[in-house]
Length: 128
Length: 164
Image (tube, rainbow over all chains, first blue to last red):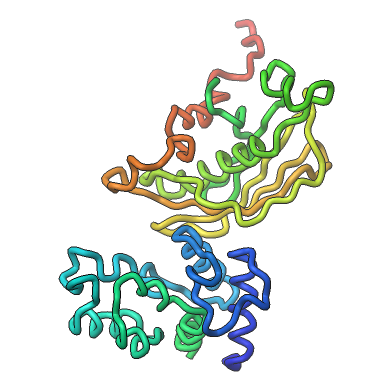
C-alpha cells in the first residue's frame, strides 16, 4: 500500500497528463472543474488514467457520480440540496467534503465537491 | 467530399489493434491551399484518420452497439509530414474499452518514418440519449457509411481470375 504522499504524487501526475495543467496548479484543495478547468469528457480520461496508474478498477459513477441532484431528483428545493439530498451525497461520495458543502448547499456549488483530495481518498480506499 | 480519412484496413485484430492506410493524393482539393507550392496533409485530418481507425476498432469490440464519438485528444505530436504520393499507415492500439467509452494510442507512419503519434479518447452514446441530437455529426466516428471501409477489399484484389 503506497503512502498518502505517493498516492498524491501519482494523482497529481495523472491530472497533469489528463488536463494539461502545470503540477504546481494541482493542490489537494483544487477543484477539478473550477480550478483545473476539467470538462465532463475529462472525467472519463481521468478514470482511464487512474485505473492504469494505480492498477485498480473504477466502475462507472463511483468516482464521479452522474446526475447528482438534478432538478427531477427530488433532492433539490429552491436551488439548494435538501437534507435528504445531502444524506444521499454522503452515501454516493463518501470521500468528498460534504460537511463544508452543507453549510451553503447551493446546487451551483456542487461541482466544488470534485477535488484533488477527493480523488486521493478514493484511490487510497481502493488500494486498501 | 465524403468524410473518409482512411482508405482501407490492412490488419484488424478485434479488441486489440487495427492498421489502416491513407493514400495522400494531389487530387485532394485542400492540399492545393495547404499550402500553395508545398502540399502537405493537414494535421487535423491526420487526427481524423487516426480517430476513424481507433474508433472503428473500439466500436467493433462492442459489436457496434454504441455510437462512438471522438471526445478528446489528450496528446498529439507531429514529428514530420506527409506529401502527395505518400502512403500513411495508421496503427491504433486499444487501451481502454468500457461501456461509457474507450481510448486508443495511434501512430502515423510513412514507411519507417514516424509522422505523428496520438492518444485519443472516445465516448459512447446510446441512440436513445437525448444529448445525441446536440452533437455535431462530424464528431461521429460511424455515420455517413464510414463502416463501408470495413468492406473495402471485398471486391477482390483486381487481379485477373485464373483461366479455367
